[in-house]
Image 1 (cartoon, protein in one colour):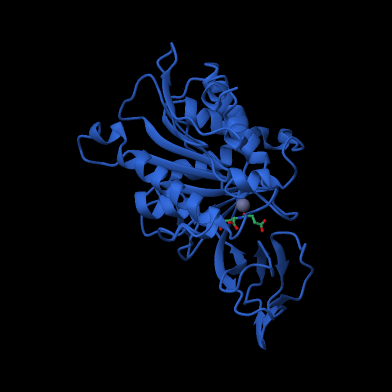
Image 2 (image 1 turned 180 degrees about the horizontal axis):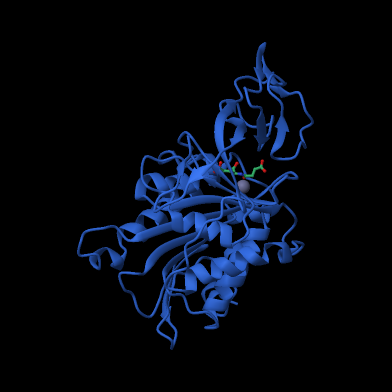
Length: 355
Ligand SMILES: O=C(O)CCC(=O)N[C@@H](CCC(=O)O)C(=O)O
Ligand SMILES: [Zn+2]
C-alpha cells in the first residue's frame, strides 16, 4: 500500500519504517475537523478542530534511539487512535518517530548517537546527522509557525511542551523516570511536575548543565517544558510489556485530549534528584569499578572509587552519589554517566531546588 494511504489508515509506524517505498507527503482533514500534515517520513503535525488561548503546542517524539521500542509502540497506538478518529486532540501536536534506519537495524544509532547532535546544526556526513537536522527543522517549523502565536494578545508565548520518549538500556531502581534538561528559560513548570506525578513517573532528574539532547533543543531554543522520559527497559518491537506503562500512556492521552489537567504535588510521591556531575570519557582507558550492567540509581557511599580514566580517579562526593546511565563504551568526549543526589523541591508555578 502507498505510504500516505497507509498512514491515513493508522499505519504511521509501518509506513515510517518501510524504506522500500518512497516518502509521500500529504495533508488531510477528518470530519471532526482534526487536520493532519505528514510533512516528512515519521513527522506528523495534528491540529485540533478548535484552538484557543488554552491550546498548547506539544511535541511527542520516540525512536530517537532505534532500539528503545516501547515508547515507539506508545506513540504508534496514540497516533492510530487519532488517525482513525477515536481520539480527538485538544492541542496542536507534533508526533515524531525519530530514526527509522536505526529502528530497522534494531540499534541505538547507525554511526553516532543522534541524541548528542542537537547542540547545533550538523554537517550532514552520516544518516544520524541528517536525521538530527531534519528533526531540528521540524521543531523550528512547529513552534515558529504555530497559529497559537497570534492568539496571545499579551505577547506571551504559547504553552510549549516536548516529551522525548526513551527507555533505559539497563535495570533501574526507578522503572520510570524523567530527565529535565538544564536551561535558563522557565522550563520546569508546576504543571509539568504535576503531570509526571499523575502519570506515576517514579523519579525526576534535574540536569545542572546544558546537554546536546533533543529535549534540551526545544527547552533551550523555544522555552518548551522539555523532558527526556525513560520508560522501562529496552526490548524488541512487539515484545514490550506496555501494561507497566499504562498509567503514563493514560495521562499522556489526557494531556493531549483535555484542555487542562489539575495541578497538584505531593513531595513524598516522586523522588527528585539533582545532577551533581556528569563524567565525560576522556580516553580509551576509561573504566568503572562496577559491572557495565549496574542498575541506574545504584547508590555509592561517600568516598567510593567509581571510575578511573588514564590515572585520574573519580570518588563519590560527600553525602554519597547514585549513578545513572553508566556506559564506558561511549565515544571519547561524551558523557559516560551522570552522578546524582536526592534533593527537595519548592513547588509553585515554576519548580526550583530547595537549598
Ligand atoms: O539507559 C541508558 O544508558 C540510556 C538511555 C538513554 O538513551 N538516555 C538518554 C538520556 C538523555 C538525557 O540525558 O536527557 C540518552 O542517553 O540520550
Ligand atoms: Zn534513549
